[in-house]
Each structure stands twice: as C-alpha cells, then as structure tokens.
Length: 111
Image 1: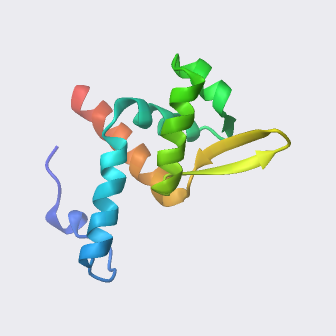
Image 2: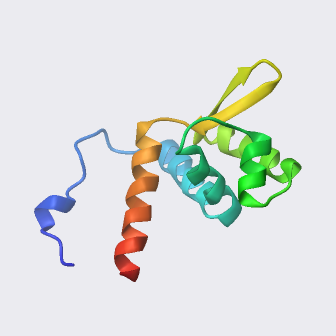
C-alpha cells in the first residue's frame, strides 16, 4: 500500500550522533537473531521468569538466560527480582511500539 510522503516524516528529535547511531544499530543487531527476537516478543505479554520463557519457546533455560543478559545490556528488556526469581519484560513503550509495528508490517506483507 503506497504511503503519503508526509506520513513518513520522522518525529522531530535531535540528530543522531555517531555514538547514538552505533547504539541504535546494536539494538537492531540484537533483534536480528531469531531466538532473541522471539524472547523479546514473549516479553511483550508481561513479566515472565526465564524458565517460563524457555518452556514457551522450546529453548533451554541457559540459552534464554544468555540472550536475556544481552537484551538487558542493549536496553531492550528489563528485569525485576521477585524473591528467588527474576521476571523479564519489555524495556519500555518505545521498544514495544517498534516491535508491534514490525509484527503488523510482517502480517500486512503476507496478507
């Protein structure tokens, strides 16, 4: 579906310097791994402990823990300790918005 060029203008913000461009590229690189992307999508539905994410995605707990550590460092997910368990959720509404928009985009392309 063609877009109105006016609707694709970026929101006003400060220009990205090299350091922020590098940081942004790193975030997208994190999402380039299918397992990490699936983990991020899982965190959209609310806080989940590592074991629950691993079970839902059919991945080992150690692999999910490794990916979550990287995703936290990239500020894509956050962790909240509750007793002995750590629950993971999407970092903020900006990250959720990007992921949800890309999911909608993929569904549009295949529809």
